[in-house]
Length: 281
Image (cartoon, rainbow, N blue to C red; front, side, top):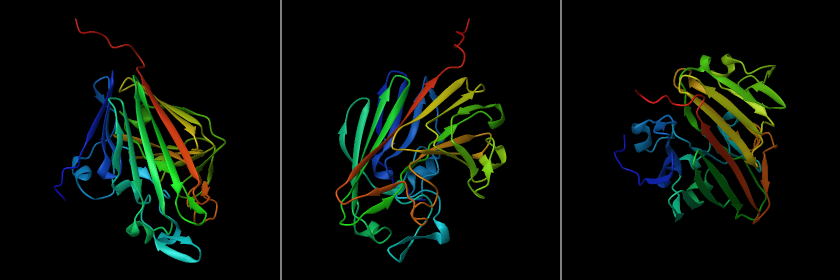
């Protein structure tokens, strides 16, 4: 493990506190509300150069693993790992306030070997009393149309999956591994490679064990949502996604940016208590 300590930035707004690592792919590594941590944290993973498997990583220019492990662009094949590469690419601080942080990045020659387009990004994280908003702007700096997709990968802590009450509105659902259309959010799919919810603008999760209600909204640009858990007693992932799975290779990516075109995508989170806290006597 690389023992390097990444620079961290703390934001606060009343009951909400967030920790962000700009150089670690703009990773939101901690989200504390009312004194309770809401995100899965893996300190050794955060301190390394490995792909983040906790917090809220950024997924770009694709999510999941492209078919055959490569991106197919203009009759060329580019090696492609899981969830793109911005999750580990260094960002720098453009502006920082008590409850708001703006980070920026620009692609380089190393990224061009994985993805043949020049681009730059700007992310703004804003805290409210009971939640946050994350807005990402992507600009195509190349001379060709740039196919891409953007996703976020928040690992929310839960008490137990079977105790959760999930509510959402989606046009359709499918098993992410098989593509089989589902009539309901099946636990088996969630615990495998996830349930893909098409045209799903919001989802709420009530967790009676943690006495917490989580409301996630796709505010701008995002169209779909992935629901997945690798630990039914530990965490639940709710991924805002801009388009379908394997969009670039299937030539139906969620975003096709013209030269010098920019697009902004935003999602937000709100937390509340299911029951009022009872003061100790």
